[in-house]
Each structure stands twice: as C-alpha cells, then as structure tokens.
Image (cartoon, rainbow over all chains, first blue to last red; front, side, top):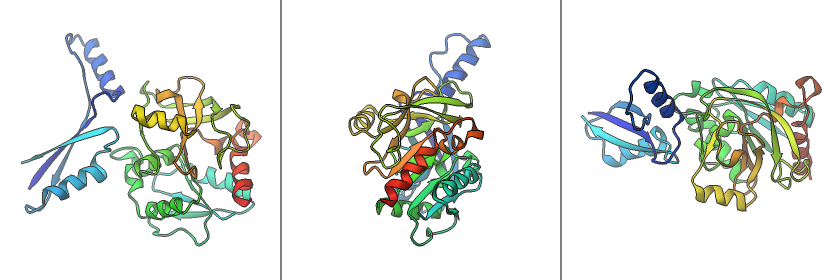
Length: 76
Length: 222
C-alpha cells in the first residue's frame, strides 16, 4: 500500500520560506497571490495490513514535529 | 568530572566542545558515537555539539534525536545529569522532547554567522552561576535554523519559571521573545543556539563562554 503523508506548518506558525516564495512570485509578476505556505510530502510504501494506529505513530514520532506541524495521510 | 560529548554523523563542533571541556575539567571527555546504547559509567556531564547531524534531513536534529544514544542521554537527564545542547545540540534536544518548542528556519532566511550580544536572564542555574544577574556577554552564533518558537502558554511558562537562560539583545533570527537559550523544568538541561565553546580562549576573540564551563564544574563538583 502506498501512503502519502502531507506535513504542513500549523496555522499561525510563521513560515519564512513560504513568505520568501510569496515574495519571489510577486517579483515574477504573479500578482494576487494571497498567501504561500510551504510543507512537505513524504511517500511511503507499507504492508497492506498496516493499521491506522501504526501509521499515526510514524507521523507523530518522526515524520511531523507536532509542536509546529500538522500532518494528513492519504492512502493510494 | 567525567564528561561525554555525543558525536553524530555530521557533528562538526564536537572537537571544539571537547577542547573546552578538557580545559575546564583537566580531563578529556569521552567521545560517544551515536550508535552507542549507553554512556560511559559514571558520566556526570553530557554535551551535544553543534553541526549538521544527518545532514539536517527531515528537520534539523530530527534524525539524531531518534538515534540509540539519545535514549541513554534521556535516561541520564532524568537522573539529573547536566546536559547541554549547543546549536544543533539544542535542535536535537527539542526534537527529542527534552526541551519544549522548536527551532525553525531563521526569519531572514540567511545563515547567520557572527558574534552576538546576549543577556544572562537566569544567573542562578547550574550552567550560569558564574555570570552576574543580567550580565551582557558576547557569544558567536552560526546557524540557519535558530528561530525559536513555542506557543504563548509555553513561552509564558518559560519566562515565569526563570527558564529563559539567555536572550539576544538584538534581533538575530526571529526567535520568539528573542530567546537564545532555555532550561528544562528541572534545570539540568540547557539548550542554546550561540556557541560558548567558541568564546573560550583569547584567540577566539572573546572568553565569555569560559565561565559557563567553569561555573558548571564548580556546581557539579560541589
């Protein structure tokens, strides 16, 4: 089974990289961008019988730092 | 005093820290590789050095925090052994849950490498007793991810419990409340982004860091 884990900064956490991207888009002439937040996508290949609790554990213990980040899992 | 310096792949201030500890204690620290499951018997001080452990993969300090040796460091910290994490070491300590909050990309996005003025906010701790209250000192910084962030409740608690050990006098990296270094609940774990071991002898351009190690030696020996 393929998993996609999307790790994003929590709302309200300052995202300097997102802000720099926003600025760069503006300087390329792309006006009207309201906001940019940068995150990361981690793709996993796991055994088909991997249960939700295990997947959640992987996210909480390593893939995301839950002090500053949220995560969302998509099963392919 | 028996000291240990933890070495991860990508640590690069381990030697600086070892030299400072040897000069302060008169005894070479044990250099402990990240794959070790235990610290040397009788270790009474642990240093986690700066660098780019595991190439900063995933997040700065994230991989190092899950390495076998960190379990031993956690156990030691829980027994009250003093632990200092400098720069990448601070990032490792937050990732390992030994200190609250997180260190994010510098607000200005640039790597910051210069001497910065700091204020000693708590001069009563294990690590800072050789400094005067509110003393202003100079330590070098060299980091890309030094922007300390935590939620307001955590920041308020750190402030009210005297756990902000050092504060930047100027804006350096966007850190919440200009926090440069914090202590854990019990006061035996210190994490800081600036490098006291690089302000140890006159040839470094300053010696303000020396007292951190010497003060620690006195309090631990006492």
